[in-house]
Image (cartoon, rainbow, N blue to C red; front, top):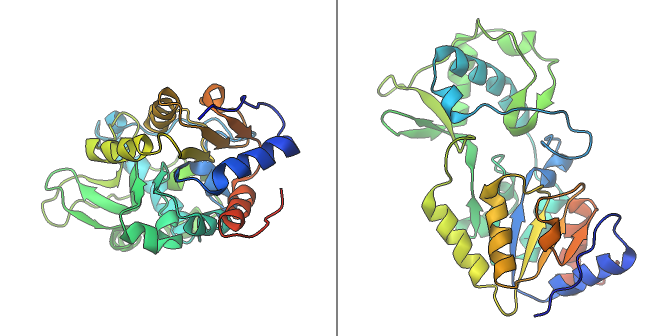
Length: 292
């Protein structure tokens, strides 16, 4: 398939309609980023106006108890907000869009909540894991995050109430610097270090997840399309799939407010909200007019 001329800057009515037409009847692999969850009240990293932030790296996390204390004190508060977030219209639309595979860089678990059918059939790959799961770095036991939250509540009575007004940040973090009084629990089984079962900066995405996604992208050759929604593609964990698709001449549509690393490889780049676009696309794929 000959790729369309890349479209940059403000989205035109023609490019919006053309992107919908391209996506309407073809097999899709969808890659989502933090922009898909902003309508659920979860802030993202790189949308226009987002404050600069350096997430904790894996090397920092394992470097000593003070760094883990800082991480868990902030994450404890952030989870109380992220854990109560609900899927938005964009998440729900992806259930009706029914992609061959839904790849997400998000750790919030909202795709699984909105699309249990996709999750149950193995068609959701959470590249970076889920913040709702906790793993022990020693015995590798995985446990539910709510259980750890209860333990932290008991060990830090009044902490959440004392810091109820702190600003929320992406990935279940908050803007809090005074964390030296927070008590961090250890693994109940072996006494080891507990970490959210997510891929930190400085860690690699598990090879089996990458292979599953690459296989799905490769299968698009000849008739499918890769749709990127709400990701700046700033990190290679997601951008690698755009590169793979571009190399195979698979058309790419990017829906994101703000520039992305993959703009030069996109057939269409739309500067619109993801919930709006995904809802319209779902209507089109189910036979409705949807409007352009």
